[in-house]
Length: 100
Image (tube, rainbow, N blue to C red; front, top):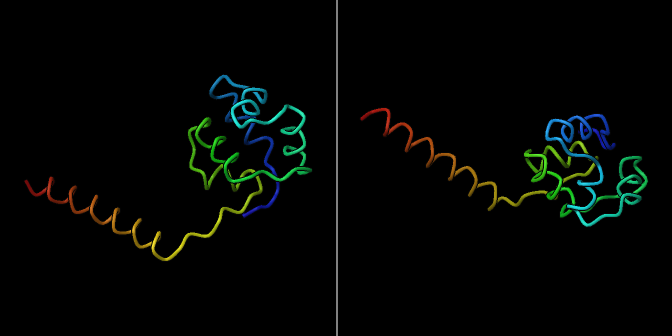
């Protein structure tokens, strides 16, 4: 995972949605100057801010964090197991539907 802010990726995602950096800053509660510092790797972003970016851009928080040069907090074993159990339940339901 690259630990630098991928300006081109963020600008492209914003353009796809007809948005700009001012909207991104406002959504995250940042001033345009604070966002500019983040885009230049001169200000760290919190996971809350990155989560807002992700929601606005329609991407996962992990993708937004990676592209922002932020390491997401590690997930616990319990969270990992819960996620896997959810995926298994979804797959079992799909398999049952296919068998019908």
